[in-house]
Image (cartoon, rainbow, N blue to C red):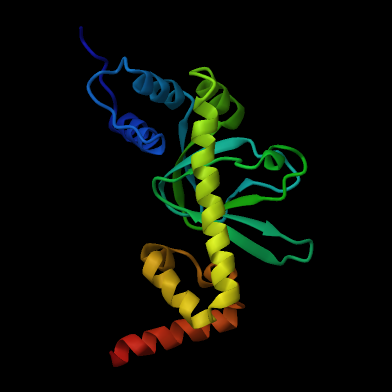
Length: 215
């Protein structure tokens, strides 16, 4: 039997989806895991997104799933007065979807925006969830739990550090844990994520640079 050939971009998508689901695709395309990934891949289309493009808005149901191939996307909340609280940055290989039930309704308080130019695979969320559920009742809870736990753990750790560590130590940890992110994302966004004002972030950045120079 001759297997249909795949384009390089299709192969990237299939491999990315398999990693998201903790699978390793082999030659056999008839296994339950391979069929699931193949079904999901058909829902996605590739998009090139400019920096600072609005992907999802608050007060509107979150409608899409994003699988990042290149670039950085931020998830945040914003007050009426314009104050921003950045909750998470997503980058290459990450999947983004409306984890919280409220974000799938008009009561959604989360926003999603590109921090850099982004190449992403995009799918309709309702179709994505329905496709996973069609492969068994346990598939969706199993998939959803993994990302929910990861985001909850990261959020609680960041909150803990904010209340127990000085800003210079938090800055050092961000540099250590997210070196590529600090090179790509604008300083004002990193400041909001770190929980400091831009002027404080600039001082922290200068101090860290001076320490490196003085070695």
